[in-house]
Length: 391
Image: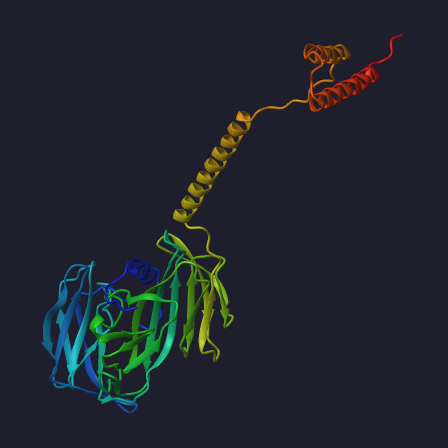
């Protein structure tokens, strides 16, 4: 179940974002502006304190090229400003390093007429015990492909509601971990551009995902992808979700059975229709989704047709072979009733052979002669009796 490369489901995710699908407060912004400005602050109780004299780094994330573009220093009041050339084919974001931990902004705004000039980059002190919860979860599940398996996009929204950054204790104690569906196979990070965790920040062990990087206050999104094998009748998703659950199913017959979420219409993604279910777990510790029974895969159907055809030809060959052998057997047809004249002729021939012997036949031969003559006479009588009377 270990994998870390971006999967083909990135198109689904980008289509959802383009359609205005929002899971967290910053999901709708994707493309950078020509100018961005803001302040670096640290959480202190119910207030924030400016953090000055720290470097702020501008990053570009594109399909082919990604990395830092520029670095500017925040002043003593934590204020900063940065300019750059916009690119509609890439995303831009900012980061600041504090106490050895890198904090990233959400992707910058995309409207050239309304640049982001009031950004707040929040940093925090660290703790290995501050709680992190799963606030929202979205499951996007496609129909079976040619192999009969289904692709699942698992979009997780993690929330650190406190004022301290949750830091991992050590390599054996991650900052956060979650059990994944036992039916899932080949788990991987779905898309490095949309997920707010890098592949190096994640670990996969058995049926669990672990976040090995610090989790700052606020919300961060983690997008995973895995597959369900052919013939799997259900998906059981463990893990309590505090706020909302969304499920998008491409198969109209598929449904959420536990807890009973409400069906909330349909949504088009990449010219494909997904049926949306929404609600809360209402205290349940897992989510169950049932799928329609799997049909016969094209390869299996072809194999069955070939097998049936071969059986048919074999049966036909056996039938023809049996017919040929029956035709080669001697044919016996019931003989017609012998004519009385023919029986009388047989008696005459028998008497002639006996007379030719000169009467010197022994007792055994004479006994056979008399028995055969008696048989022929009885047969003659029956033949005469069976003939219709003459009028």
